Length: 250
Image 1 (spheres, one colour):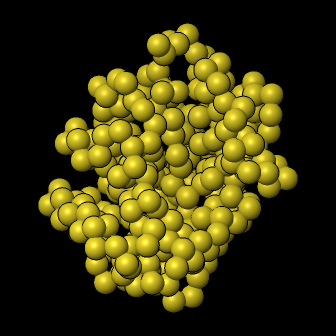
Image 2 (tube, helix red, strand yellow):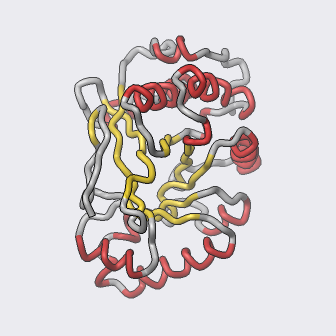
């Protein structure tokens, strides 16, 4: 059950840790537009302040601090992106189970956008399909409020979670990110190629952009490119950069 007694926090509280007993920062991994040969977006990935793994931070999240952490992550990602003079879109993961009221919880994100002069239209908020959401009406209300505020949305790890295409029948994000499990070895796997073709056809019909993530080899990249994928992400191009921005020359 969501706790409706959470106190709204402003940006300054979030930047000070918002009551968390640990500190964290971000690494950014670029998403590339291969058609225009440029960085399309950067995904913010949580890290320890000495570049410790995401797991070292996420393992500290519990029901008591989930909301504060979710809010602090957004502010940290936006503040650092602004400081790095990021020109691309910024993609931030959010925890739907941490959000008790979409209209209230989005205020901190809007405040951070204004405070750090990073346009709200440059932000993508990702929900992972792998996170089980028992209250789908609640998730729908979150997405609708984000869209109303002009924020782009995405489903991360598409094809690896609980809902699959059923999730798309309930709401249509701006982007889906095909899970790396479907990308891995796609150059030698006819079944995976057929599945991705099907996903792309559905997304084309309902005007959703497709991003392929987790690309690790040249053959995977070439196969996805030949299938018509425009947006790509993975270690083959660039690993996450600790408190910095990545690039790649096509």
